[in-house]
Image (tube, rainbow, N blue to C red):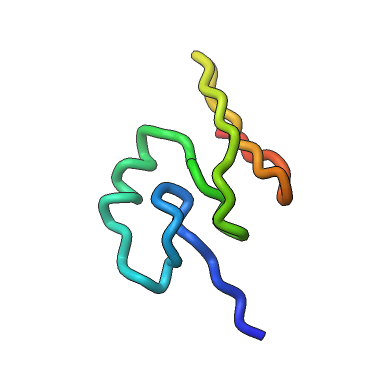
Length: 62
C-alpha cells in the first residue's frame, strides 16, 4: 500500500510538484495542513512560537 504525504502549507500531495514557494513561506509561518492526512489544522501563534494540532494525528510545535 502506497502512503501519500501532503504539503503542510497548501495541502496538495507532495508528488504534485516541488512546492518551492511553500517551503520558502514555511520558513516564516506555521503549517496549515496535516502532512499525513491533509486535514486543516488548528494553529495558534504566540510570541514564543506556534502549535498546530490535527484532530487525528496530534500536535506539532515550532
